[in-house]
Length: 364
Ligand code: NAD
Image 1 (cartoon, rainbow, N blue to C red):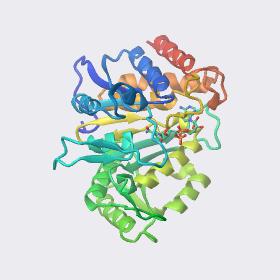
Image 2 (cartoon, protein in one colour; image 1 turned 180 degrees about the vertical axis):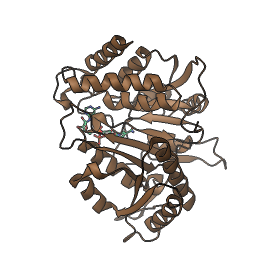
Image 3 (cartoon, rainbow, N blue to C red; image 1 turned 135 degrees about the vertical axis):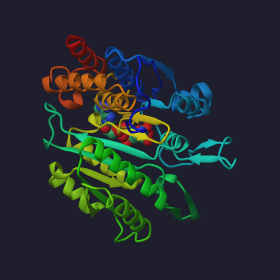
């Protein structure tokens, strides 16, 4: 059993899972996901992990070190989105505990968690569900986004009052690591084609290295067809013919942008889940953000967070519960009677979760 896919063999285990409610719609959608996981009969000891604006209120910082430590101990977290102010000097700073003792500083809570916990890959499956109105049907692709470097290191400075500069870092080691993960994932899930997405015609050194290092690893994998595409052309391919895409491997920033684009192909951010995986730990979170425009109204679509929880259950070895939740959620989506406004319905977050729980219980 692959080490990163299953935390441990199960023997009626109670799983420690850190729940990070986050900001905006985060508390609403994580509460829905928690209810559904509990209703599927998985024994979970939920540990509260404050982060974001609520953490500023209770702990004076958007990311208390205690939250990072709790995830390190439990090795699994389910995280709601956290707000990051645009522009300005907002940083998450850890003064202590670094490998070389120097303070570490990050541009957002999510980036800080990914880096502190060594979560080197962001896996984002994008799938059409019957019942979700969208421009395409039959989309079934997986995005592997390198999660630890690129412009997300947030290394920026003002060269002078009118010139801002950002540093893009790509390393062979991080690229090879994410490529090896992609091979392992593809072999386990029966996927056969992967396209490396880059802009090496312009960024000849950084994206050139990403392309070369990823190609070198992927080309060694038996049974996997490897291609490469410039990121702008890849966006056009996705919009023209997404059904033809299988797996995409991208550096961090393109991975983030293309993930939202791909979510839009199958019904929007409300249905796009994700997993951040490292060698010791994993954190599951939807692609979407805090959705301030609908926060607090109980109208957020919980699908993306519930699908993230389904990925989490597979990771911890609860494949049967994952399967049952996916089936119950698919039935609710197909039925359309109890879905949120972004999917054309009138249900609230809680009502949609109730409906999934009712389906789970009816099948039990
Ligand atoms: P967003 O994803 O929050 O919202 C974009 C649009 O999608 C909005 O119209 C919103 O209403 C809609 N939407 C998102 N999730 C939805 C859901 N579950 N159900 C229904 N509609 C949904 O993106 P944004 O507005 O650019 O970002 C808002 C905040 O979220 C920012 O502070 C940003 O930094 C943060 N953010 C956090 C994360 C994270 O923590 N992983 C990810 C992305 C954005």
